Image (cartoon, rainbow over all chains, first blue to last red; front, side, top):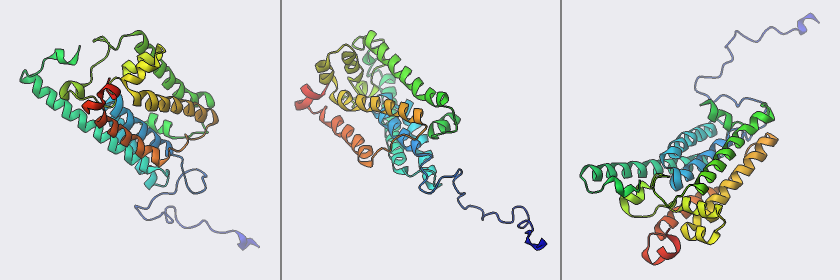
Length: 121
Length: 146
């Protein structure tokens, strides 16, 4: 039975999926891949911290990590992209409030309406 | 970027010591900040930057009083802490502590962090927004404002 041996399947690259299709998740996970769900968790935590205390220092990371979380869900690597979306929204709220406050403070300082003493330094 | 990728990967392939480094660093940071806040004086100017939102608008943000509340908690005065910022004391600090503990557990076992339920993810920002408005209403300021 020498014809039992199969020839190698096609030329290299011949069986590539069409360009633009999502590659299958790496590793041996069986469906419902949650390997990148931590991204959503951190996006939410950073977004909340941005509102409560840390301003843009965690709001901008929240946007970045939240985007990566949504990306991971679209690639089938996470199942909680909603948390990432909330993180992105909270991040933009934090950045927006910071920018608003920065601009208005700058205008008020420049016009002499307030002085640096206002900040309590 | 690789730091974020590392933090996002449950990574059973990495050794336990390496997995525990991130929660250990976060714990050290949290304890260091708490110690600085406990020994420093958040009531006096100069130790911490002020809240730009408060300086600009004269309104308290959801986090205002949080540093002083943590300072009072570190000194054992729960009532003073609650009077300064009840939401930070009752909700934010316990959640942060829980997160760090769960992070240690997940890193020890090499598993992912527990899933955050959607009601919590939506409810927390809503609670902060409501608190933001309520603590700036004059009638409620004796209870909710720092």
